[in-house]
Length: 125
Image (tube, rainbow, N blue to C red):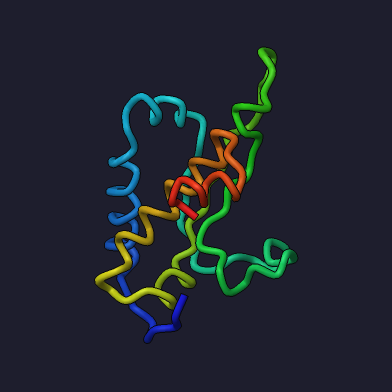
């Protein structure tokens, strides 16, 4: 992604862009997200960046994908984090909403068990 002047969006507006992205998820899929917490954080923490993705980490899924759960699965809510700082840094204001949408869909795809390769094949990489 080409570096841009950092786009600053107030927290409320950024949260609304994330909400819009979630509203765009079809109901037949969003009904499975009832035990998923979606949060916005400014930047990934150091321990998250151990894989060297500092420049490109826009979102993170943490949990057990539904494809890996057994019938007796019981766990804490899964978590999807959207990182505001990297998105604002890398995308101009006219691109930001679309990139937030791509990031939200990308992380939801991980919840459904898709790996990076398959997500990229589907155009959400």
